[in-house]
Length: 409
Image 1: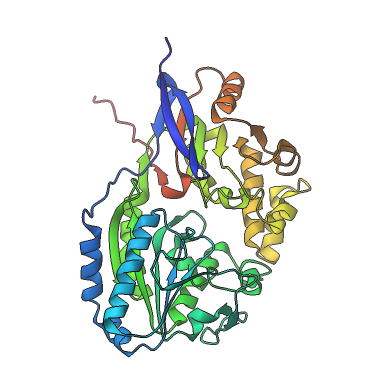
Image 2: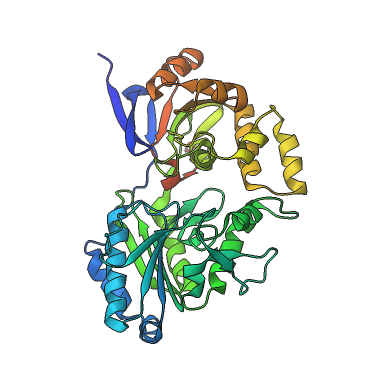
């Protein structure tokens, strides 16, 4: 009887299985490092109590704002939020507003007691100019955030295969920005490159006065591996090595087929978001191999620009030339998908109608991972090898080619 290895991949707010024949499985690429902080509340309290600049700012504050960003561990975010609010109440009687970005987990209105919780909406939330950043375009940020004299952001720092990092670095821009600001940040950028998006976000964050960061890194089990409290530069400097160590995964053998999950909600909320996880799977895939992507895509393709750049079947070189004239982040993702399709068969397991998957985005639609695997194995042969990347947004695979040993003379 054939033995199968069952691997579960995040899919929206749930999970779906991939069943791989044991003899064909090459690797399961997930972070190996486990949690290093056992009592994270104690660690967080220490970080707060030892931060003298934050204590002084809290004592002098007349209006505080706490902003919560994306996190893979909602309970941790809530507990840190409560810890911050308790800290602020002990220092000052000034009013506090809690803001959440659209990527942050939805919270009940009473999760922080009487403290007001407001979800920022780029289209409808009140925004005001933020003149402190002297950049290429005017920035409008949430009025509660701008008008506060003490600002604290709470969130996770994790890798992004295009932008270097995401999470903490996204809370101010684009997380608390107006729709027009987000559009200006992402699109129609002459002489711009994808790496510049990260730099711009950090520059905007560093332009915010009285801004403190309560940040953390999550290990493979989604428990904290590191927590810190300080300024944005201090946090990024302290976390950079931690992110690399936590999410790195070395491997020495590529596979004919790679099954990859985009990471579940919110990182697989749309095809435009899910594409950001593709590099994790491509790094483990052989030339002419097949990629099976699991992404629920509850919001469909997710962006009109991504659709426009993807439709029409334009060649990757055409899209890339267009990007060199004026950079567009959704266009960049569409060009990477097109380049991937030129080199590999790509199957998508999602809720997007098959017509759009195949006619517009030129991928192959599949109902389940295992159905896609059966199809691919018929094409590539029953001896085709398989690797699985359960969560492409939480691992940075690195191919290490084994050195051939010289035969002793």
